[in-house]
Length: 409
Image (cartoon, rainbow, N blue to C red):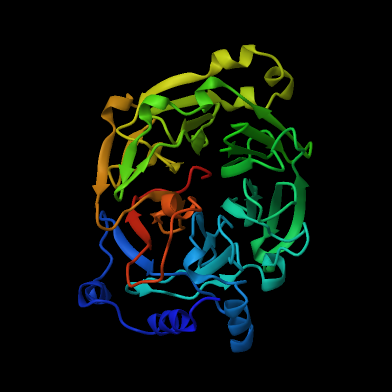
């Protein structure tokens, strides 16, 4: 039985002020052309239905506060949507939101389960089991990938769920991936981009250590297929990088994914990279959309080595001006490269070893701001790493003015 005092001290942290140096943020305005922290957390907590439901979850270990870590973020309708995959036990909510505000820094803001508590309770396979990431299309539909399947938190198959954000998150479509596409035991759908040219397609990275690859889903056909290639595997020479004094020796395969913007009379390119890797690759989406072509071997000739990045990356995102933003894990920063120019023109636009520890996922709002979350996730995904409640800021959301919109516009 855990020490009750430990949790009482945790409760107090929720209402206590942080150090003076952190409070200084409150009086500062967000500056354009500069990365600024808008939200930060020492731990993740939620808007519980009642105090007693919160207390019950806490003392029965249905909620273990130190185990929740946010990964994916997306923005729509004045909300920042946040995913919290169940990498560890005691995570009651896997999809939530907070309000998008223009005020000062928000600390330890409570997260609201989305669309409700019931869908987040994984008592059956219709509910959300473990959401890693999501994307919102131009019509206000959220496509979320419920596909973290490498631990014992669920026995349900991986699935793609479409929610109507204009109707309070009403489920309008569910697609369960066959085991041969995403493993029921060992699959890890990591990131997703949407392509609404020639019908709507979703492209997803399967970060599985057993069967990594690129998953394509056609809404029109309601069918998925998977592409596997050596370019989607980790690069052993890129292992051993250090983030926050932790050496990352794991060979982590395909992870980051980004889609080029819409262009008239020009096909789109899908960019991808392994997390343990420096090489960035691309492939024409016309190849991906043709299931017949991907059944053979010739499609692999269409994969292009774009070049090397400055460091290992987790998240990627392209805006409607062709700027590829990518995280730089061991450099604690963000890189930028315009895909119409040689990759040698890429540059590092932000570095901060104190604040940006493991930058993960990007999002863009309707006011031409780019958002990125940093989350120390290399600690949380390692089940043997002990994490404690403390005053340390573990999660931050940054924003940066780009004068651009998402790749979908």
